[in-house]
Length: 93
Image 1 (tube, helix red, strand yellow):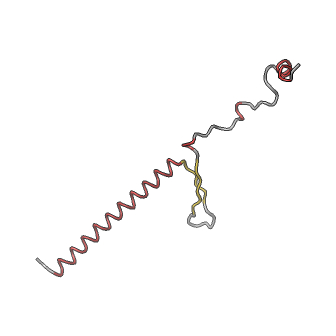
Image 2 (cartoon, one colour):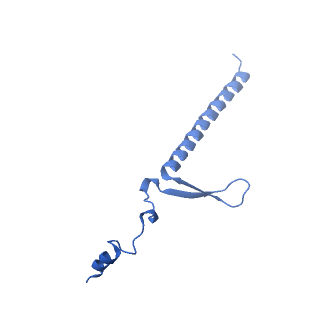
Image 3 (cartoon, one colour):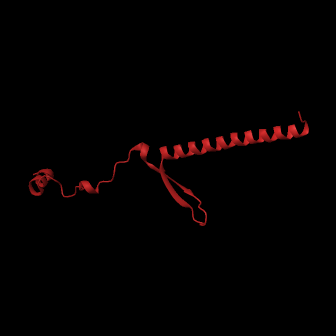
């Protein structure tokens, strides 16, 4: 008799070395795989491990860039106002 037929007759149809469904590793979808980076935190000399999905890293970086761009525009506007004030002080209307 073949080995498979013997296992079916003795073991009830399932091989003894099969992995139970609860012990199988989770399926990782490519877009949701965590990406970990290390960042320094205040008060510690050890870097902290931060894990997020690629989509979340991209959203946070885009939000940070938008914030920096907004602050640069505000600063430029502030500087322009200060220049106008200085010019008016030098040359009153």
